[in-house]
Amino acid sequence: MPRSGKEARERLENAALELFAVRGFDAVTTAEIAALAGVTERTFFRHFPDKREVLFDGERRLTGWVTEALASVPAGVAPWPTMRRTVDLLVPPLEANREGGERLAAIAAATPALQERAAAKEAHLIALIAELLIARDVTPEEASLVARTCWGALAHAIGSWRAAPGTSLQPHVDRAFDLLEGLLSGASPGSHTGAA
Amino acid sequence: MPRSGKEARERLENAALELFAVRGFDAVTTAEIAALAGVTERTFFRHFPDKREVLFDGERRLTGWVTEALASVPAGVAPWPTMRRTVDLLVPPLEANREGGERLAAIAAATPALQERAAAKEAHLIALIAELLIARDVTPEEASLVARTCWGALAHAIGSWRAAPGTSLQPHVDRAFDLLEGLLSGASPGSHTGAA
DNA sequence: CGTGTTAGCGTCAGCCACTGACGCTAAGCG
DNA sequence: CGCTTAGCGTCAGTGGCTGACGCTAACACG
Image (tube, rainbow over all chains, first blue to last red; front, side):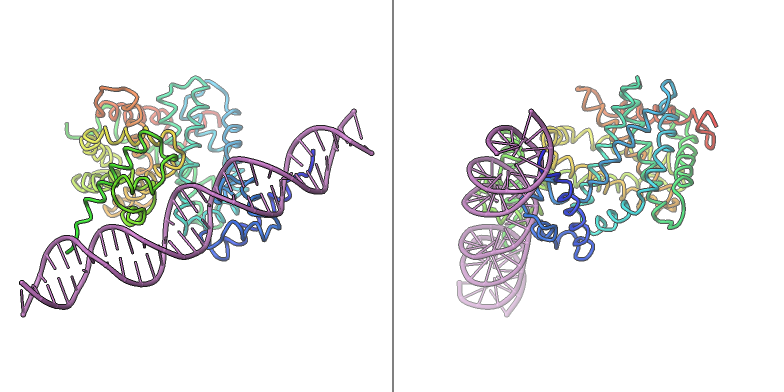
């Protein structure tokens, strides 16, 4: 096997991060990133399918964490408690990656194109969770619903976590799930309108 | 005031829809759409900020429906029942627009770029719902959580509705909400792990 | 009915993201 | 020491998208 290629990839990531932080995503060209990394523009696109993806490379590990976390929850547990435990297992890696997540969020906050990509990544993650639940013999219907809902709670928790610097993620997760269960428990199934 | 401009816009929409349906989104250029509509490419971009947006023009009305539906629910109702009623009010317009929604879904199914845009639109809609709830004196934290969750349920219901041709949307919505409330009611707040 | 205003459009020139094809070369392997 | 091959450079090209400028069809007004 010839050159590793991972060096160039890392240099590209660092160059992109540096330039984006200074001038913003839109004001940086892929040619500039490549030049700063010491390669050509063509090489940039050999490592990343598009300009945005250079920022989401860290996010790729998230799917691995989700898969592992869910796999370590014993089968037979009801869907919602299963995801409740899975989310708890996701807290440590998420906290360890706080800096990376916030850096991405900071750049994405001013760039609609990046928000789009982030939203798409979330949708894929929800689909992945649903598939993993189905593989654990959860009804497809329940799986989809639980995946959407639990990810919503986690995303909400991450949001309030980021809004409160210095705090740990876990209490935000606990609060989100407790709050959610409390909000929904008021209306019992089948009698939602309150005025038939 | 000079030329209406709405004619050209509608011609562009129809031309795009026609070409996309035949050759797919990626294999059609904006210049071709413009030519079929009898205008220049430049005019296309005067009416739509980008190539994708020509497909989401109908989706714009959705924000209006959401705003109206939520406004027609009396204040003072708890957040979750409020959204439960709001979703019921959204069912008629959604059903009336079934064809448009499915045509978009069919084209988007083969085009990642369109799925991204759709995911971003959903995120914006969730943010809108949260803001409207906050304006109704719901806690920001509750608002965000309820908005995410209720939209997740509605999206799930629309999904199963589309998968079951000939059915009405309402029962799918009812089932999604009942199922969700049932799934979460098993775990009471504060005691989620089942095995401390 | 002539004149001014203006929203919509055409034209041109250009940037930048992204791609296919081809050839080169450094790294490993026998 | 040649062979293989993954990574890279080079070149040429497409297509999405934008700014600037000028034109003209519609409408308002005297």
